[in-house]
Image 1 (cartoon, rainbow, N blue to C red):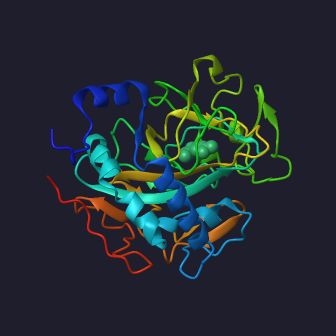
Image 2 (cartoon, rainbow, N blue to C red):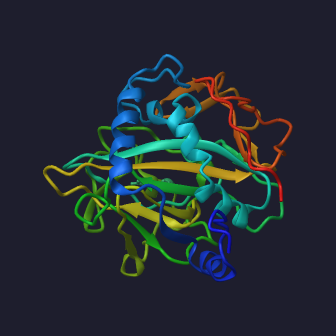
Length: 309
Ligand SMILES: O=C(O)CCC(=O)C(=O)O
Ligand SMILES: [Fe+2]
């Protein structure tokens, strides 16, 4: 096999189909990751071209910096990632969101959730797949910018739970960062950026099967690929000195409509204009004609999508 071909093997695809996730895979060596993290951290402070003008304590401030920070643009295009995505999604792949998800020492974990339309906050879908497809949601590529361990807040997955939504995202949630902070659910303090995700449960009497959860332990520089429809959460950071930082890039096939019929991202009690937003074509050529497209990075970098096979 060509060592520059990172496509998933037949066996890996079967595993992904069964479990809803695969990995971790190594993208950067720990030393390289540390350097990259340091450089990117400094560049994130420059918000001249940042896509959303949001207060620093609102999570959306961390969204989509792959659109303006060159090293992150390069990251979402990495062949180690895109080849594998193409194995799952086919030839036309777009990156429609990225997010930094930090867990500082003492922070609560992330509550159990599944995302299909990503409309959980406002009740309005952010992603619309063509009808009659078996899956919705995105393929998440979560990269550890630091190590992720059970102590500092690694993710938990419940394998095989990606086929059935236990949550109804069309209900929408109430943003209340005070009431929804550090609430103990199951054994741990877990939240969802100021929301209570459990309010979307279709069956109020149902509980996630925590006994079936597996910890996703990762070294800095590794990434894991998972369906957003998989049941996932993360543990609290119980350390006093070890930050956990994940950078997740979310991808869909080009045929998915992204933010249909709206000019805003509506989350966290605010509405943020999509003027600077665009999907980034990382493989192939096709995207839904109504999708906003970023033809080049806001930093000026002009990367070409991987050619179709
Ligand atoms: O990093 C976390 O704690 C949760 C990640 C997550 O929910 C996601 O990437 O969709
Ligand atoms: Fe998630």
